[in-house]
Length: 175
Image (cartoon, rainbow, N blue to C red):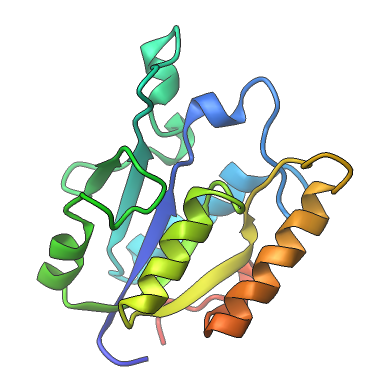
């Protein structure tokens, strides 16, 4: 991939993990997988950029809108706050990525069928090389469709649009 890479962690917020966590393709370990990715990215000097969704109707407990404490940003790591599904729409994400000279994004987070999907597709439209971490994004069942089936449907669309899908353990930020 040309240019620098960044890990984009989308909407992994307490309010989306409690009481029912969003499921990954192989279970409910989304936060643990994100934590491992973040640690490896930091160790390799790859910037970690967080995205946090702000709802018009905030949760009863304002702390629930925070990024899960297990993966909380460190001082100096950018946190993009958004009010629309795409992390690019009416935010400073693109300015941050340009400043960091990022051309390649590793994307993980929530939700497969919502904000992650919109952000991935917008990134592809903007010409970024996008790798979606196959087992580090989550969904919930939609009607009769299981979370795993939802994930598979969106991953097929991302691959068709040009994204690469890779398992968390296979990602080598040192490349």
